[in-house]
Length: 215
Image (tube, rainbow, N blue to C red; front, side, top):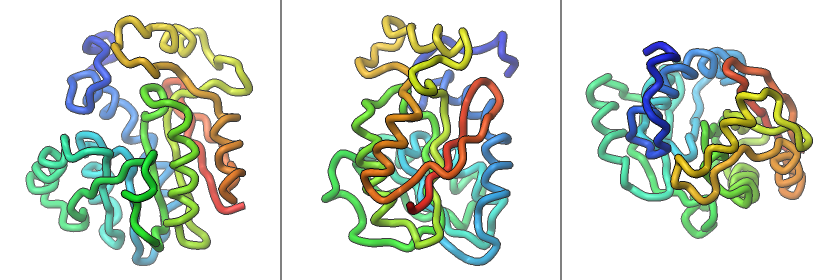
């Protein structure tokens, strides 16, 4: 679907808009993952998997890895499983509930080589970053990384006028926490949990891929 055919803005994970945005950004994100994910066997955890469209698109490109979807509630778990079956993705585990604001919902420990989260911060409060970094610190292997993808402000500035306009469309989203968060806030949250912002990669459509590693 072309940009001019963009559906009306709707942040629900099963909406036409989210599906459109997901198809638009998935290949650039895949290229980042190709350059970062390990070549040997390992595990990858997706936070806030939503419909499961990203994890089901990425998994076939890395048959040596096991991908673990997760989300705050099980609302979209059926859709994740449906996509897995339709695409015959045998290296995707059953989705698990994981609420970044509730450490009791996190696995006790883990050795994930990577964690990733796509397009969550424009709809989630910034305090999610604290839980995300604490969760990554608990679950990542020693040389693992967390990738956070999406549009962000940089040191209080919008990088483009279109991102500023996107930030200011609260009335059409119905999401109280709508708005672009700042890379600096994620960096501070990371440092509080022994993580660091290792790379800030410019991506198409005025987005970033932020790579966090142990500090």
